[in-house]
Length: 165
Image (cartoon, rainbow, N blue to C red; front, side, top):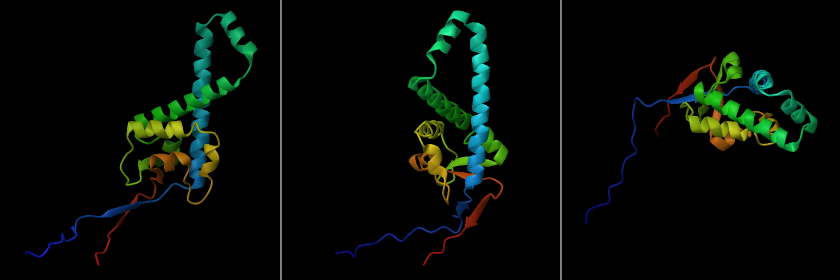
């Protein structure tokens, strides 16, 4: 009886879309190197504390076994937890990201949640994840799998108004 009404697309003059500048591969590599150095310093300090708390017999027994696959997996997991904790506490930033003025955000530009930060950290524990970052644009697995990106804060966001046809 009545003609079907179709909903008109909503349009707002006040809606802007932001485009962010992704951090370059060089900055991402600098982030990784800085964060890895900070992680090793943290692990060294943890080792000093453990050496002060443990008896010499326990320390010698740990040293006799040498490095095993389990030790390497433990280091990977500790690194993932360290990075997840840093990005969760500092809202998408780590020591390396503070120095290079970059930040991890969701693809829509919103800050990442603590859960997303920990997923990004766990994604880094995947072997050869570092090599997934090489390329243009830099889009490593921890970004793809968690739908995030690392942006360059020096350039800021560019407002782009979309035209309605």
